Image 1 (tube, one colour):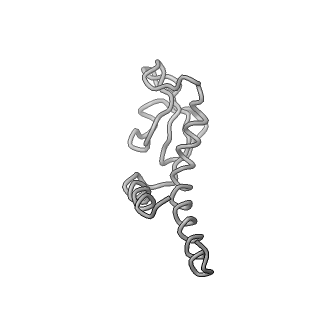
Image 2 (cartoon, one colour):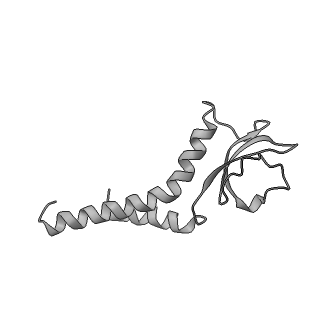
Image 3 (cartoon, helix red, strand yellow):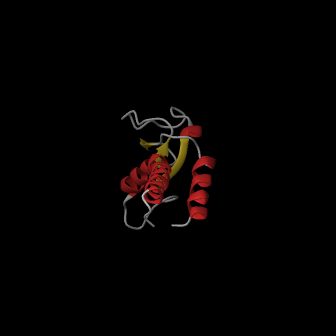
Length: 109
């Protein structure tokens, strides 16, 4: 991966809503069974709107009726991946640079 690609990833991470992100199971009379990625942890209560703050939601992987869905029905898994990526991607960029620096210091390529 080239440095300009790492910089682009870093810029995207910096522009996104601050983390950490969490998977939330929510509910609503109009959009039942929401699986969302949120800046607030899940409470385990499957809150209905307006009991949750919609401004905390950064993504949704399931909104039923099928406004948002995935064909393979991996809503929970996709939400977990998105939430994890918010913290992991910046750390991976840092690790790539750290390892490159180590290689450069030891004369490696």
